[in-house]
Structure formats: C-alpha cells, structure tokens
View 1 (cartoon, one colour):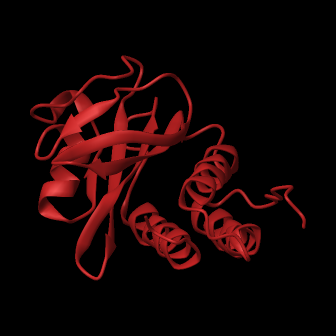
View 2 (cartoon, rainbow, N blue to C red):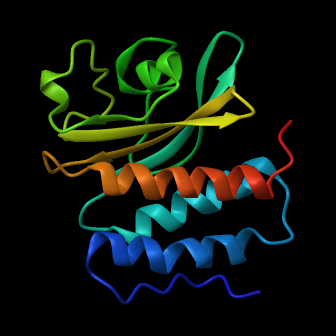
Length: 164
C-alpha cells in the first residue's frame, strides 16, 4: 500500500482534486474509524502546509464534541454544541466558514495565532457524527471551494469507516 502523499499542484481546487483519490486509496480496505480520521487529518495538513495550521476532527460524545485525531498544536478538548465555530457547525448541521475568527461571536481561541477557520459537519443519514475543523494563521483562507472539497473528504472517511 502506497502511503506517501503526492501533491504537485498549487491551485487550491487542483490540490483537492489530486489528494481526494489518494485519500480514497489510502483508506481502501481499512474500516477503523479512528485510523481513517487520523490519516485524513494528516493528508489535509500536509497537502496545504502554507495555508492550514491545524486540522482535525471533533467527535460527538454524549451531548457535546470531544477532540479526535488531529494535526497541529494541542487543542481544546471539549466543545459544547452551539459554542464556537465547531459547535455552531454541529448545532446547525452546516458548514461554517469564518474569514476572521476575531469577528466571530463566541469564538473559542484554542490557538491565539488562528485567523480563519472552517468547520464541516460530519453527517450520516442526518445523524451528527462530529465536525471536521481547519484553522489558518491567514485571514480569509477558506471559501466555498474548501467547503465543497472538505465535504468530499468527510464523505470518503465516513464511506470507508465502520462507525462505532
């Protein structure tokens, strides 16, 4: 099994087009939820080293989100539904793009260097499994292109995994 991530493109959409088949191949034949989340976070972090400072998953646990596999600085461990960017994405079951985290009411500052963020809910048949979260030290780093492709990442991980 090839585990080396190969990224030759520089345009955002082209990078996603290049890494999605690699992620699919990497997860093929592996149904462990945590292993697949770990590899997906690594793929995303290393595909965008100059743009993404933190990438990881917050998973539903009880009535809130708890930190799952991630790449980056240590992070907040628990997030209440409806609180911060991730909690809002979870509560509203929609992707939340924040160009300036300092202008987002109730932003949870796990990393003081973070300037922008995107949180994508992970849904299976309408049930919230968690949230994929990416941070950047650059304001305005995320947009609808990211939202579309990150939804694809979520779909690949969910499709490959046996959800506990």
